[in-house]
Length: 239
Image 1: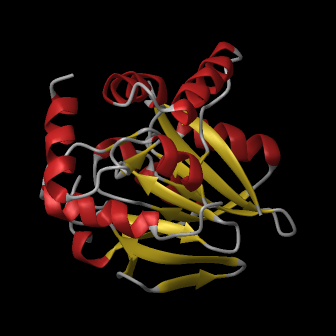
Image 2: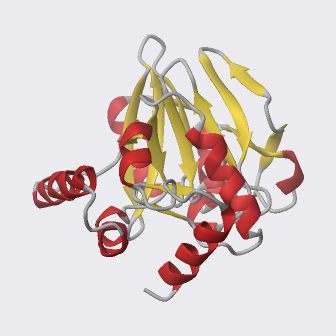
């Protein structure tokens, strides 16, 4: 399997998970169709599946056009079926979704939205976290609670340290500004910020991060309890 990062809109990332033997692919959170189409037409890829982490438009905006063009199958959380366009395969928490050579564990990670899920491709040691976990940040709490978001982040923290984190947006540098303000003596964070700036200077994504990096540097994952997490989340909302 190969994972390609596809920049979309202003700062979104969609991801193509490509079976190199068959040239089949899944796309995760296609916020718009055109960049996906451009890539798969150029590489002659068969887009078989569309995987949605949650219902926000900047994660599902390309569903309809991609399904119509390629007859792709849309996969999403069963309790969000009325909010995800063109959905046909409904998955649930802790389920193993397996089609062709693609295999992922579904992890329900609410907080940003009530129906948010992550796709954990354990064979590839990669998780697609949408807007729940960002590199050096976490999503705003729109529909859920602080407790739900804290628990969702805890679920991700329990994955192996070498798990690669593929999130929904290029927010890493601005997230780092908040982290360093509240964790200024963190040498791991200081080193990561240097690496982030080098990548952006070279016009390359800061994604993927690793869970090890996030546990060492992401102030939201370093919060010890819901109370300290909620205070940080409030501070970030007004940062």
